[in-house]
Image (cartoon, rainbow, N blue to C red; front, side):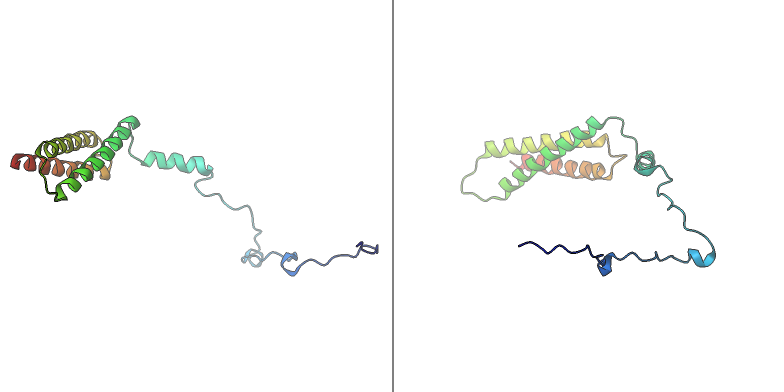
Length: 148
């Protein structure tokens, strides 16, 4: 089906697409003309705002050290969770050797994590919390080992 050819009619714009005069926020009434919008962050864009943020953050001399601390914390958390699960499980048989080995492993992981996080505790609150938690966990594991 083809449309009949007729002279092109001027199409009316949809009401939402109709161009209307811009509303002013009082500039015209005060005699001022609106200029370009001021840029945020001092006119330097994203790079300038990140640079300012970088100056406010504490300096991290060795990012690899912080990565080692995070890895140690993750290892410590998984070892502590396994140790806690094993201690809470009340099984019928006692395997003292495995339990002693697990507690020694947990103590070792906690002490390593504490040593790594102690380097960053001045700059990072989460490292301060980690140092306290790992010291308490290592203490608890050593006390349980003394009882066995």
